Image (tube, rainbow, N blue to C red; front, side):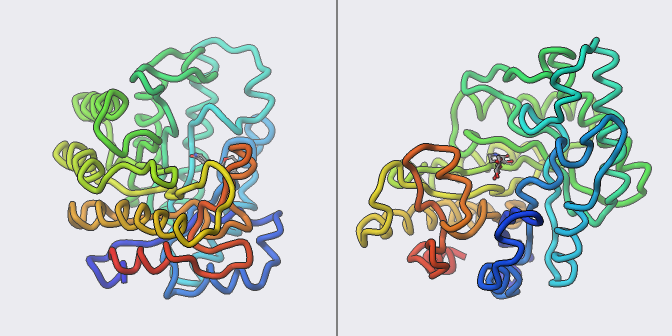
Length: 322
Ligand code: XIL
């Protein structure tokens, strides 16, 4: 439906290889069915700790696995991510750096990943989760060592690396809490404007959209936030959609109906702003492998398939919204 309706993608995160998902035939059958998904985002395998486990020693195996699987099945890949506060190698976090030496590390990492995979990546999330809720830059080794300039340097290095490839690779800033108007959304808007003022490439903003059942912003709020970004001339995408229950039970008819409406609202907001909301990615599609229970104690039931890989009402609500 998404493909037919304006060349959007509907995709999913997948945490492969090296996990139970990799050998779960039922999981893989759903993942690779082109009627379900036209895009994959590697949940982990392109992150710093996996791609540069030792300084200047690169490991592309996990990322290659995802790209090969996606290409075999005609799916595109949003490559995720180049610069983030989490899942960084120990040699970085425990190293002694000056702004100059850490900037060189960041540049080398960005150049290597972007040039290695080229336009097998539809896009890169260049900086992930840069902002606090109050609109200030969040703490990370990058920010705390290099200063706020790290954000602009990351995009500058990504742009230079894209130029080296000679390919069309979209560069995104990806974060949560940008899905409705507010302080953080305004701060993100200003970061885009600053990049543009400096003539540094930014093509889109990823709105993660990790929501709670009953606590998902309205369609109107989500439309307004998306339009703010689109008005600047950048694309938007829903990049990590899930709608979690904050407490059990996760599988009551009433709960699933609210959850389905919440999924509907998010997807509808993307459809309503037109084709420059490029696509929607769920942060894995099933409660069997969802990241939610390990990240938020007691919470779960967030995905569109349940723990036995059966479709939930949210699956059908999404189809209706598209
Ligand atoms: C999560 C993965 O899904 C987990 O497997 C991992 O343990 C932690 O990271 N925002 C992001 C993603 O941008 O990279 C995170 O992925 C979820 C929150």
